[in-house]
Amino acid sequence: MPPLAYFIRHGQTDWNAEGRFQGQADTPINATGRLQAEQNGRLLARQEPDFDDFDFVASPLQRTVETMRILRAAMGLEPDRFRTDPRLMELHFGEWQGSTLAEIERRMPGAGAVRDQDKWNFLPGGEAAESYEMLSRRIAGWLKEIDRPMVCVTHGGVIRALFRTIAGASEAEASSMLVPQDRVLAMRGSTLEWLE
Image 1 (cartoon, rainbow, N blue to C red):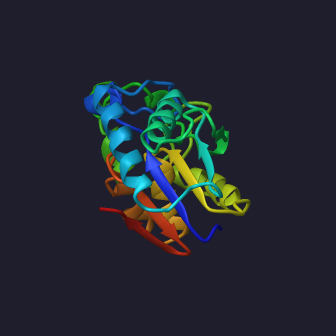
Image 2 (cartoon, one colour; image 1 turned 90 degrees about the horizontal axis):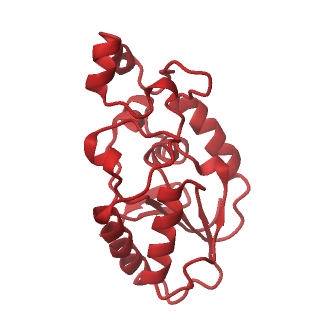
């Protein structure tokens, strides 16, 4: 793990606003999301004297890529100078992607209650579907390769996996925690802290 890393969840999308399971569906951020990305870029710029030694990496989905470009521009950096890594993508919600919980309940009554019994290990239907536990293993492998300070734009599920893997949050805590889109998370060793 690096001595210091900053994690930012992508800005809001219309599907976020509508309460839809997004997963790996490639949705864009909306006007609110663009403002959140700019605000997070300004906050991040105040944290360090310079970011020359930092690795900038994002999930390859368009909502994270656009967030990173806006964030870097707000920091006064070249918008496109970052890399992507597919391991940082959100967990795949399988056949639930694109639906709200209410829509899923109409198709499969009681599905939400089943998920709530063990949200961390719940696996929705669909060939590519993942649980938070599966996502956590994917992220743990990625974390082992980090060798310098970093700024990462990723997804809510990935940040939940960090709280479980790095900070030791319980499965129940990690799977149900709110992950804001207008905040920056600082990781220093095994300490995770939302910046003000």
